[in-house]
Amino acid sequence: MKQTFDASLKDLNSFSVEAYAGRLLELESADDLQSLITDFHFDAARDLILGGGSNILFAENVEGTVVLNRVMGRQITPASDGTFILEACAGENWHELVLWSLEQGLSGIENLSLIPGLAGAAPMQNIGAYGVELSDVLNSVQAFDLQSGTIHEFRREECGLAYRDSRFKSADAGRYLVIKIRLRLQRNFSPQLNYAGLGEELAAMGVDKPTAKQVSEAVIRIRRRKLPDPAVTGNAGSFFRNPLVSQATAKLLGAEFEGLPVYLQDEESAKLSAAWLIEHCGWKGRCMGRAAVSSQHALVLVNNGNATGAEILALAYAIRKSVRDRFGIELQAEPRIVEAKQS
Image (cartoon, rainbow, N blue to C red; front, side, top):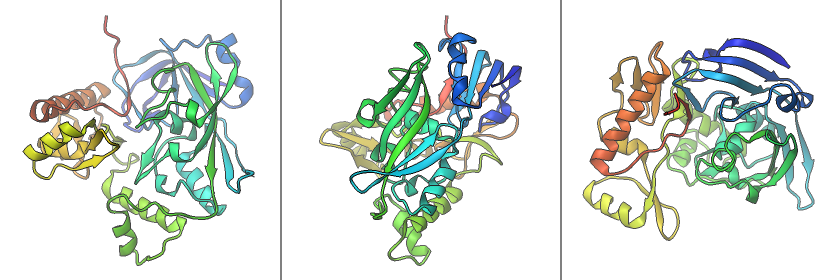
């Protein structure tokens, strides 16, 4: 286990904002887990588990310990029902894992290509893109209980997966450190092409009957065109969740605001486009100090150069107020926000 005191977190978050941790611990093997209990006394109220840093905004320093799980490893085993279980340790890069699964002839997560971050964060956020969510393929999660020091296996239905949410992010936030994830994939490819723009991209590529690799390539092309590269411009991808409202509310808003995209979810609820709401409040491409809304996509807040986390958070609050005042909708942030605790 590597240990660093007064550690900079600037290179460990995709917003590239400067923040410091009182101590930084890097887990290098499963043997390091128990040390979090016996030697470092992990406390969720003070300490923080950090994955790839692609879904967090540091608006304040972390006075306690930041833990990086960098344990690697992946394997595939056949299941009795003809599917295959892809097991990946939490430290595996998610996008590289997707590409590797495709090289092994497996499908199921090709629509989730180019999502930044590590495998361990995937179930916490229930990552999703282009019509597919992790919940569609997740088999189980192995996690370390930071309170008791025991290891637990959670079946998919025990993970509390919801839209960009899970028990690991909400009900049990800070309690579990994800060790491994297991995904149920298949060799018989069944493309998911319902998401707007994906079929059009494949057509532009001259593809009529796509393979899983070609769907992955189409997703990558779209994402690179629509979203700024965090390596060039600091950002955490989509900053706000698409709001879920009742169908009655969606109908009223749709009647008042022509062109508002509405996506029915079930018999009672509907999802609205947060990007549309933000853009129609005039925020797309707009700067507020050193923070800005991307001109490529209204959901993406960017660091225009040495912005602080507090400046980006102030921009997010201003956007939320605009959307609330005009549409009566309260936007919720996707990234975890580290800010000063209210007394």
